[in-house]
Image (cartoon, rainbow over all chains, first blue to last red; front, side, top):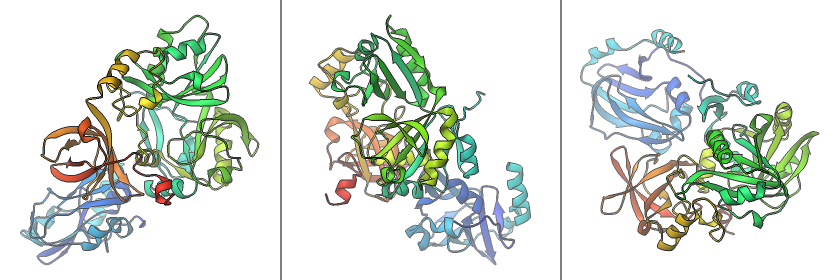
Length: 131
Length: 358
């Protein structure tokens, strides 16, 4: 399992999701904190490619032996690609939550929504406040 | 809020990095390294569990046997001193107050190891029915219970083989304990009953001998793979032993609480049965999910469900109409609005012998 980290180049949602924004596209995933809280993932309920996702809304589910969790979209848009590595082996998310374990790639419908997200420092602060 | 109880091993769990969770009024380790590696350690080698939250009730006296014979479903005459028996405490409706193991220490001395959440209800149940000449004591706080389970558990502990459901005084590296040949994983193993004040020492010795610390998470997936029911989920005071598939621990030829009702259910055949099932499609069944038949009609509810680390798919238990409980029957589980196919499995869902082709 990966060591705890929150890369500076990502933006974060309070539901423990991250977005790597590149122009009007973004890659989404779940944070180290989220995967650690769940434990080893054994099931990924994937969305359809082409589906619309809305900021703050669930677009997928990840499940460990003990618990299931919605995956929340940090931004709105249309799903361009679902990570086939995570479909085949959900534990990829535990091994590399910000790299090989990305979840979907999305064309953003409103890139300005990114202003609502936290930067890495603010997310770390948020986690610390959660205790 | 009620304060959570801690076992004598609490500090050791914290040092080992366990994730502690509330369970049945106790603060217990749910996992250390992770549920899956812990599960696999028990199936392949040897794992150790702190199950000190379980209750120990002692019943002694010239009429102890008579009292237990009238309250427990299994027949104590089938065992003798040094032997143990899986049995049920039943109510007047044939429902299951608790499932437990009774240890016959002598003709007038019995120990009951009961579920943590039922320690007080069981004690009250027995106390209300106590006879002169049968003295009941809750001795739970005097003991810790350490389960060591897995194909290499005896070798690692340096213990000889012994028949299942027997027990004897023994020691591990100088720490005295009672070695119970019992468990909740489907693997060979022991449960070590040890004085609370030497439990930490025993735990340390067991770890030094290479047992992998395992939490309640793995304990649950292990028992579910071998279809051992969990009281509170799969069996309750509102479910009877026959429907639950526990007729084999009910001596219907003796008199005990609820036996007329159990005889009736047995004779008429239960309306529903506790079936084991395996998912044929992705998704993990969870307690409370609806079970549907092939026509899409609701026919029952999942009582336990999880991911099986050995089968690498979802598995579960649930009550369905008796006609649908036959192995091979196709069912559907409603997993948060998604209909996913499952098949009724022969119990146990996982067995070492079949995996080994034996």
